[in-house]
Length: 209
Length: 131
Image 1: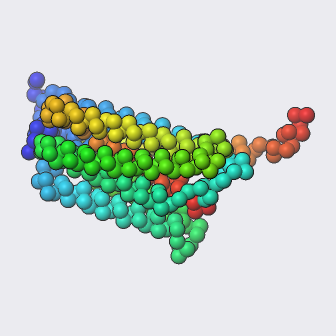
Image 2: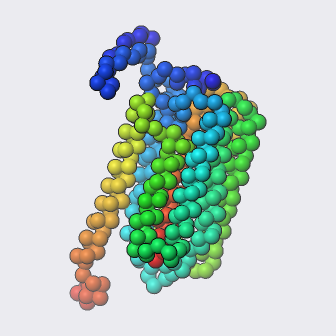
Image 3: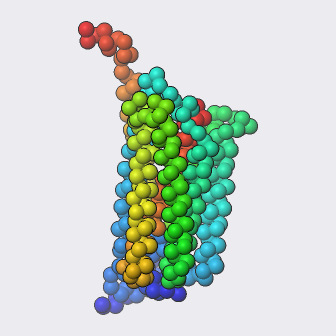
């Protein structure tokens, strides 16, 4: 790799920086995955727009105010937030190459994620049993699409989480495994950010009306 | 500290999700605790505001949206480690572009659909015309 001195103007003062070849793989991989996450958020924004447009189209059926149970949503939110925190702990454990702490933090993250999915599944079956399934009205179709899509992402995240636990168990903290852990952590934290939008726009605003 | 971080040391960029500071483990854990505390505070406020009669009712949707955006900011800073530092310029620019597209998609859809809805003939008249 050739070393080139770059001079760039930073806050008016010229700062000379050494440029030694392309960015390391960790930055390239992380940045690429960051772009994927942002495109995923753009996809979710389309579902949010659909939901907002169809919010009033209940076809004489139940509205969000009749259906949503905020206590359940609060517990789901707590589970996802706690799992995001323990996922951060797993990232630190991976950086310090502590297998025990990593596996423990990932196991707790997985438990919280499964708890979230169980509550959401319970809510969905409850709604369908009450005759408020996705076929009832355009509002409910949009609701099940948006919240279900987030649930699918969480399910995929849990499969990825278990894969990472298995890979660290069998291969250890190799650089490529570390990069995958970085991407997984980005994915899991991003899911929690999308959930903030879901519980605010769908549940809190929906039950306020 | 570790391979991942020595790779980054002295670089112009930092990967999204990586912490720039070469802090001790205790400092890094503390960062997550601060983020968790702020997130719990904002979430609890959201749920409280949504269910209470103490707040002026028309202000509630705006308050909830502001609280949600604040909490997203907390998550971005404390969990995803997106900072304003020069090593994060690429990550922030990508994020800004993503946010722009999200606003265009949501705002544009709502605007267009509200306009169409406003200009559409009431459904019963439309049915009579088709007969």
